[in-house]
Length: 263
Image (tube, rainbow, N blue to C red; front, side, top):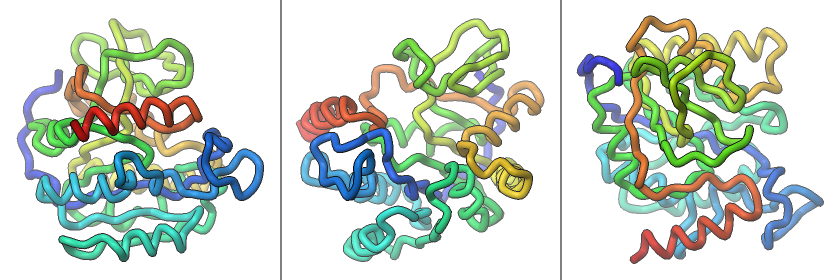
């Protein structure tokens, strides 16, 4: 684990929710055209609430009032859903008109949040999870922190957090750095002001340098590999329930998890 560096608790969050959900296919959902769900993944409902509504409620419950969502596909539906959220301040919206490209473009679209001068929670929108998981991240004593689950499925699909001598040395679906063991990344990150600022610059370099089709994890990986020892820490959330929703079979897992969370 990384050394405890202290630091302020984050009060703002950036949610990446612009994607088209190509890999979900029909999945029993409405379909506008083959291979693409008509409903943005953040608006999929489990247990009577959308993922987006759950994110906002959990973040607000942890004291994060400044929430920004990067939207693209299904933008009007997303705007309407956000406008309908009550019991808190308005959620800001940033439009990514190039949502058909890689998610690094969405990260770059949210650069004003990353350059806001304070710590930031950065997160994927397509994850259903126990609120305690986010609590671990927000309240971590590690200013630059990722979440790691040791219960990882084999194969190239999970994004892996690779640990050697107690520190993160790689972060990729197909890592190349030698390591002692690895777990799965949840897709949620706590970033100090300095690292958030650096990530904004690195995402801009990808967008301006011909890397617009890359995923947002790539500049994060670059930072991790270039960082001094113990710059990035992790919280082990193994045993806490969560699931990312990428494929039709993930919907089955999410529905079962929603019932568990409700119980």
